[in-house]
Image (cartoon, rainbow, N blue to C red; front, side, top):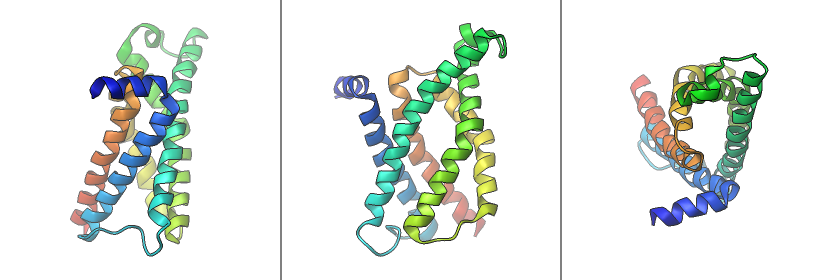
Length: 181
């Protein structure tokens, strides 16, 4: 079973990214809402909202795969130019931290804002820019360290572990929302 998964991910990196993030990102979001509200809630009336959320997550999964690959090349390029730490060429951890840093400061705000806009559109909500500040700060204190760990893994496992982190994030967000009340 594990070998089948690994072969599928290696053979179909874009499709597997869409599937993994689409399913597990949606599950993580559902779990956060379940914990926060104390009941299962599928983003309001209408049969199309849950599939719309899953579609957005799947689309984001595709972008994650491109971003992960692209930022490895970005870090390698700026390192060769002498604009970044030379250790990023030879040290796995420094490379992983560098890719995570740039992915989160350049792509992170775009991704989180796009995701919030799509969520608000699907759920017919207004944009809450004040809460977006917390989301953007989480890119630094949560996602740079988390993605650094992920970028230390082989490339074919990175999206799968990111997808699993979406479930963990759903639990954490749900917990803090309940605790805040």
